[in-house]
Figure 1: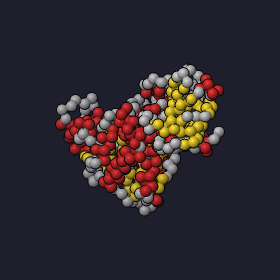
Figure 2: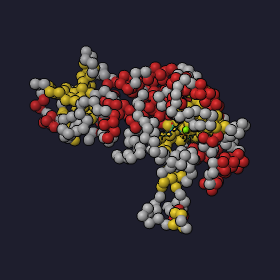
Figure 3: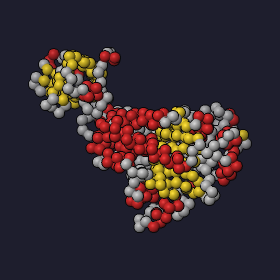
Figure 4: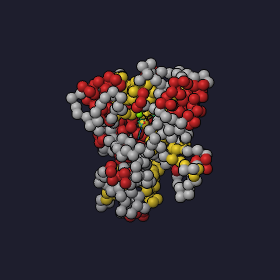
Length: 463
Ligand code: 4AD
Ligand code: MG
């Protein structure tokens, strides 16, 4: 199939002033136009947004031309001809055209623009559209930037398990993992006998890799995970997925303020990377998705993040002239309307809110000296709200045990987690970046399902 001989269209377009005697190109037909003695095709091979212009002289010489329909896959061979006076700068004048796979006229991706909602229903075909091609390449490049940021700073990438027995976040929205026959459940007394289950205990898909990352950090120093996590929250919003990728750095010998500093540097690094290394994607987003994306990312890169204790944030919200659906008072969790008010209307910039009330955050967070708040951190951005959640962890065994009791957690499920406090404990901290949320922010896409190739959401796990 000439796999190793093919030239990628992205490469041809980059060197668009270079004539070549013969190259091999393989891809899918995006458009076709016929005139009396010429046929024009535009081919896309997935390597770039732009198509390669193909000009077939003497169409009657190409036996396969009849089958060269919209969506068909083709193998082309021939010279590249620079055309500096034309917009597309270079074109191919093939000597051979072979249709590899035919495409019937009912191909769902016709030339007209489709709505994102419709494309979600054909998520298996949407990467072939301009927008989802751009998003897919962008997601790949920003994944690389995540690794580069941490690896360049001496962090080790650790693989956290997908199956777990602990509800680390305490939100109780986990998917169960079992091999028990649901029609013939084993019981002891009136309870299901999980001893008969595969792992001899209740097991779930993880909501976070953090607890295991903590164990690894207290051996390797600085680590990060980048893995899928799962939440069975029944929230059908434009910002929630049931399966989403999270980046979770964890640092030993680190406190909340150092953690906040790293979170800020990390976000700025990703934005800088996008502007410098993903020019094609960013200019597409700026033109078609959200007109101020480049300006917004540049302005975040050039300003310090605002840091605001939760208690101050509540005061700001209570004084606000705006009517909120959910009333605010010290002790309640901030709703998305409050988060958005803080960054969109009050600060008009991303903001880091920290030191939240103990009762609304997870058990592992470090209790502050006031006994009422914990060293928690949320990074909020306009349009989306929370993109990062993190904290300093409770490293003092007795206080961690108090937390476990306070939140009514079964000690048996966290005894292993106590061990790092038993043996050479250290202050440590980390955070979790929702990868899809940051992609939404950078691209300006308004629905989280449109920045992941195969979204999982309530009542939807097709493809
Ligand atoms: O705030 P969360 O729940 O924090 C944790 O899971 C910590 N264990 C992280 C840590 O300290 N290592 O989630 C972290 C981030 C959120 O800020 C949000 O960006 C994203 O994960 N997130 C979701 N993204 C998509 N769909 C959902 N259902 C999400 N839930 C959280
Ligand atoms: Mg959170």
